Length: 398
Image (cartoon, rainbow, N blue to C red; front, side):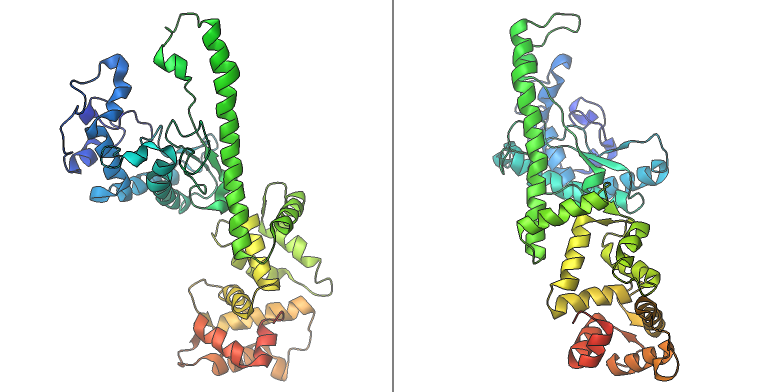
């Protein structure tokens, strides 16, 4: 969404529809307060400091009059309409977003506060709408324009993850604008010559510093990702980085598709036919359901399977068995899983007590506490904990 000073109601053009701006409550002071008069055309950017503009941005961020829902519907329609075009590079959520109502909350002048308080929550909601219909196209997201000159909690972008979460890092672009300060304060006409001092300041000093800050910002998000993985797995930072190096070596694209996942999994079960079980396991690993398994998704699930406590392992097993992803396991799903397990280990005797349908019926009868012919996660976990034989059958790692 391209915008400059948000709305025609503050003497710009309509970045958001005028009808949406008109739904917002009036600011405490009419436009152009705190300015004495409207900025001249050439100085339009001073419109950002008016309360009418800042208040409008804050209403958008705070979902006043359903603004976020409206914007989410807009982006969903755009993604649904244009997502399949090969010449669409990506979606830019907001061009040069303003911090919000800095008059009501002066701390928003700090770019990190504006980013964490207003922008990141909005971007997550918009990304969710886009990813509901398009999981592949790049999403471009911006901090406030002065948020890329330094790094840190208060003076950096304020972002701790890309829109939609870390599993979308490979489809997210930190977009930013670089305006050399000296040229912003003393503009040179388009056909003029930039003095040597200003060229050196912009090209050799300020520019490289901004680019380094942006690079550091990307590394900061990676550091936060490692910290998140440490909190959600039983691996140290050194082990996580070793796992990541191996993952990238095997998957240069940074993600596993189903075909590659099966190829890797087959190595551990040379005596069986793991294809069916691998496909079901892949679906459980693919937490965001985008058809691929990112490094984060892989390591969290693998850690739960290999190193997690019993609750963690049974939670993962339930996700594998819940083929329809509806929060329940029925007898048909159990049968399919038992067949897949038999194929996995090369079991050929499937008659009598070993018949998959019979086994599924026996397990259902034992675990189905309320008799509704389907298992909730609570029934599955408590039943497996109470029966060591079933636990070993359904969770070989237990």
